Image 1 (cartoon, rainbow, N blue to C red):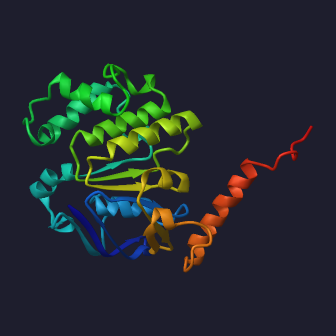
Image 2: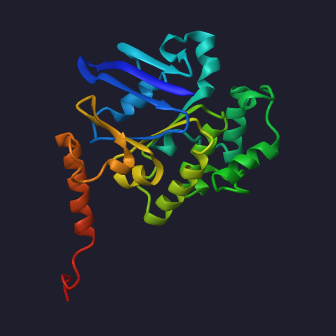
Image 3: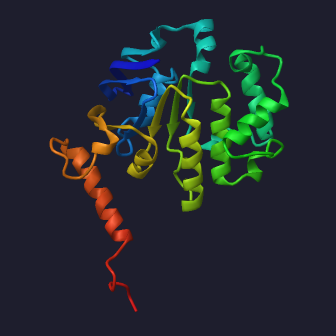
Length: 265
């Protein structure tokens, strides 16, 4: 399985949000897309998954031109590329149980590639809940879950389609340290069987926890594409914006961990 994005251009209100974006990912690669707010990260994700209009370029997944899909072909193919959105409140129906959301997804997408559209056994739903760390919570309503648990419920929903491409948008925003660690742990395990995984985040710690490669988006263009292990301060040849991200991360870490003896009595 291979994802290829070529010369992607998206304009919104006359403004070019994405300008010739190009990258590829092979089976098993875990990409982290970072950049400042407004750099076009979420627009890129929505363009790749056919949720935003593309003005120019090409997106292919396993040899299928996703931008050429129309009508029934697009609907049938949607299970192959899924996106977990940043805001679970906008995705989960407050009046529907977690199990109800999963049953609906499995029904719409034909039982995730196998059992038809007449529903899925409870065992399949419970298996998804166990996979995301929510065993036995199928009867819960979204309002009965914590913020981290709602993110996990959204993850179960997209995993129900057994996607070949999974894009996760800012999964830890607004979570406390414990919930953040839990979501990252679940994502790390859940991403293993997904051929291509793309994480969108402003937090380089999340990239280091989950990703093998890092892409830096700036002014609508990819200005860095390198192994995550090699994306460190002082790396030769870094784009100035990428270097500024690393410097900001280092300054934040220093501010969070002041030298011994510097505290106020």
